[in-house]
Image 1 (spheres, helix red, strand yellow):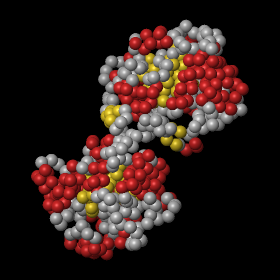
Image 2: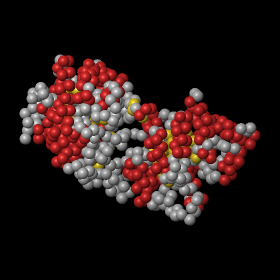
Image 3: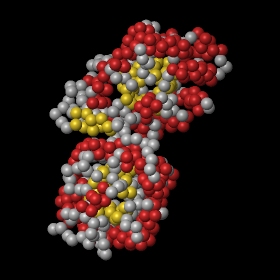
Image 4: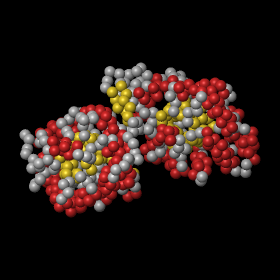
Length: 632
């Protein structure tokens, strides 16, 4: 049965207020409490009872910074969350205290600041993914919301159901709120992972269309990543639910683990200020901050909102892909760092790394960390190089990205994979956040550890490039069936810049480009002039520049290494002058590094970057070459 709120603000008033201009919300609460000494092993909500002065001080800081709306310190003040601290019997008391503290600060400030009741997720999974029923979830939300609405002497003005990842849980919360009040304004906000999906896998288009059908007054995105991602996602919401007011409260970037168990957020107040204008220009009605933001961030946003001018940041484009027999899917154009480097012609320095031969990844990660510190911008993870048995390349790539934080390029050979396995591996790689691929034929099994292993394949590299770019990236498998959501792979192809048959190599490169290749990685270059001549020949033949080129650079190890590569490895020819230098060098490794530097320097005006191939796992020699790029 609905209850009578002691607040005069209603949905009609709220709609009218949104029409008058943007509302600036507050920033993080838990982050600031933690910075003020509240441990993460404590209930932040219980601070309403143990230290109300601290809670009031934080509210005051946001009002002083210019917030038009502040939220109660009640994000986790529900039965299930408080039960983790043995406080499940204190739900009513904690929530009423949250309202009383915030309302007192608002009244003292005399600025007409709105008060929203913060309602976070329950911290449990609803059936069928968990054991909590819809009715039990609604009961928990009802208990919390009733306390927020009925707090004395005046309850909250509106409700914010935030940081949600489960649509069913949102429905339970909204159902609970509407069972108590038909006229209190409700904002619902979802949170997304780096993958632009919720933790439970909901894409932004499904969220936008579903939430717009609920009996709420605004929908939006909070938490998630930084402003760039949230701006991209709210753009989807705006396009698919144009009549619904939208809110946006991003984190201050992705959190970084610091020493002593502390977490830091990289986005500065000035950065947030620039994005405040971008949100308003994109049609966002309510804007604020989430984890990692402070009063300084809100103050910068206030200045930006109140100061006329264009934002330095623009809304990312959104493409809509129609799936067979299904609704149109909105896909945000969230380019990988590699895609951004290619588009902006930023120098790319990537190094080939081999996965471990066993289950221990420590040496791989140690090498990756050293290369990252030396200045590598990406790392290529080879797949069974020389047909030698090693850890799955996409598992190794995932570990590098997770542990080192450096984006990888996954080698994806077609040899030894049938169409079923190819497509399954592509889905697995995408799900693990691996979006950059280097498609090649791969080494024949006859030269490796298991020469008797099956060596067949169903598709050649140019065909696989086309499958990825023109089907998977459009949401379709090889048979034209839906894969639920388009992938966003960036795909590179193999190339020799000094081939024996120049005409054949030119035609093959052209075919790969027409099939969708975004860039090319070359075999080791030892004759830069021949490589430059090849690139010029492509432009003459086809009337346009070749795709972005990452030139292969392989520091020679010693004269035996140079002679072996020249005489026994197909496609590699090392000029006599370089082999003689290696033969006469007092320090062959240092000479090999110097030759590599000279080749890279000669190619610099013609290529987008370099693909370094260390000899015998000597990543330190590659690091010596990388040093040259950071010494000017």
